[in-house]
Length: 369
Image (cartoon, rainbow, N blue to C red; front, side, top):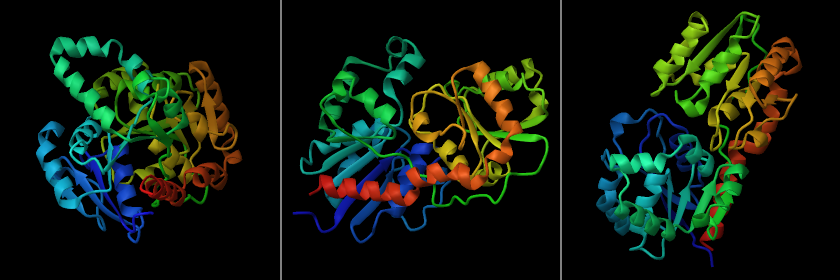
């Protein structure tokens, strides 16, 4: 017999800028209040919050480190007796998994955010490096394994991620479900292709090696048409990225915005979205830009790109540097063939917010039946 109203605690590290944070807040805001009692638990601090949390009960635990939140999470389980504990990001998943051992009737659901094997190979020999720095002890490894065993379900953001996880030994016997990220409910399709010149490109995301900014800049250096490239985001690789821009003498064509509450306006006023990522979980900024009606040039990589892009309809999926330049040049000269409604139609149909919320509600009801 199904539970009449399902109690869910959603756990995230913070409400600073980030795809996982935004998606978990979206879920907390939009799940049916007639079916679910929802509380969003933030490990960090209210002062760090950049998102509008109106309509959501948010509990801030005020810890810098997730491990220090163990006993506060334990108290929440005692006080609220959740039917489901749902967490996102690996370090949060494990601490919630550990606490759940004391509450065997609580269903533990974890949401992963990357294609794991690709992330690990991209980092190189990260385990050896971590050991040398003392971050990964034998005890930590055993505790992580224990927490992993307690997690009942994993949610993947893309079929790439799911296919990858089932080939990793420790996930082989886990129950894994794919639920894509949503196009935000705040998205509006722009009326027309911007008439402004020169051509405006945009990328939104963390300034990291993973995001492939260097290969985007290298490709842009081969264009013969004038352009402005807007980058919205910040991160550890900022200096390196702009050194590359200086090398290719493109610095004066790049507009950098560390953070903006008007990301959608910038996407709408741009002609083409550029994505150079070497891997993703499921790229939120890409589907939102497409949802607005701005076509994209996207390097083919694990993480749902082949589920999002439809060549010739909403842009192009490219295989390498030369293909990037070729398809970008083609798109610049054929922008009229990519009207906003056409560009947005695929992602709104497949990843529209109402569909994704329905997927989550059906999943939560099914696992508590």
